[in-house]
Amino acid sequence: MATVPSVSYSITVRLEVPAGGKAVSQLTHAVESAGGVVTALDVTNAGHEKLRIDVTCAARDTDHAQAIVDQLEAVEGVIIHKVSDRTFLMHLGGKIEMRSKVPLRNRDELSMAYTPGVARVSMAIARNKEDARRLTIKRNTVAVVTDGSAVLGLGNIGPEAALPVMEGKAALFKRFAGIDAWPICLDTQDVDEIVRTVQVIAPGFGGINLEDIGAPRCFEVERRLRELLDIPVFHDDQHGTAICVLAALTNALRVVNKNIETVKITMAGAGAAGFAVLRLLLAAGARNVIVCDYLGAVHKGRDDLDDSLRWIADHTNAEGYSGDLRGAVKDADVFVGVSAPGILTGDDIATMAKDAVVFALANPEPEVSPDDAREHAAVVATGRSDYPNQINNVLAFPGVFRGLLDAQANGVTQEMLLAAAGALAAVVSPEELGPNYIVPSVFHPDVATAVAAAVRESAGGRARGFTEA
Image (tube, rainbow, N blue to C red):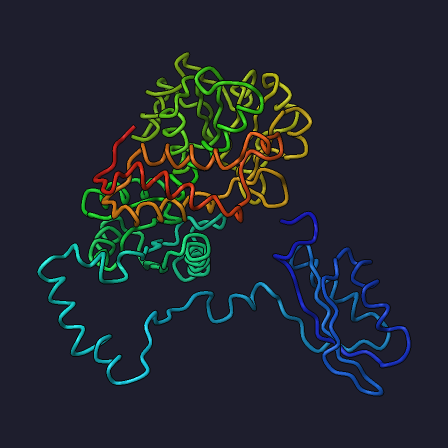
């Protein structure tokens, strides 16, 4: 829930006021007295007796928006005609569309784009399937695949409710990397059906972006698809998050003059994101890591370990710490949270080592209040846009896929992920680097191009399979 008015809860109120008197001047005061912020006030129709006005304002949440409307309606002479939620208006009819890249103005152009001319292109591809990357949308198209089981922080809300999120993802692909992406929302949460469905639609795409598929199913889906397909399969909730965390941590450690090989890292969260973050941190040189889930530290002595938790126990927590998260955080140099809200306090952060780094990435409410963490830690990052150092996957996935598609890669390797993280970190220059700027803005013009170049170089033109850390 937003604590200050946000454009995410922006509304436009169409109302009518008397042309004379004080009603117009009282509109802004009414919104502000309700705790809202007026961002626009437009007269849409004027008459001698009445004015029609659109008042656009930001609220904290839906209840607050209603309170603002009530306050406006209480102004003498005001008649409310319509209230529009601007976020819903943006989504009306969907956020993406398909457009032709070629003109179809006459019979000649039609005969080349479609029959009979298209038959020659189809036969060329039939003789050599690799030509599909050169002669079709395959060269620049990604499928954004979800089963709707782990959408944002909303949980298992199903494929229809996931569609607006996947549309947004597709829009980000286009905006930041020029990639045509398409939402594929599957009405099944059966691993076999998901894998088979993606397998049979794969010929039309140059890459597969798995999105918001719950753990542990997501691990098996990704593993099986990597084995079956000759195009890259990238689970953004895992690998996109891992790239961004490693890039941010690389720069945060530079700020506090510490080294990833020697710092103590405590992690909260052993799901899809946590597992991938851990693997990439270890590949980057981290040696002293403790991972905690809701039962406490993951260690070899626990009798509830599944395959992924067993792997974590085998590769972390060498001293066998078996306590809770608060104990694991004590004396740690770094905390990385990809788990649940409000599980730590400022007092817990105070027990960390000097010049601590805190990444509290749970959304919308972090693992610890960023304001409280900043009282004790040298560098604090969140997944939120209303604090400095937002760790957002859009920093990674557009550039990663741009590089993979340009290289005509057949898969994704750990080396590519490391290269992407290094390139993302390097976008922040030494002159810019500081406690409140360890990752660049998602709108920084060099982000996607730098990440794409690093992935493309790492791919060496072609890459096959996935190298496990």
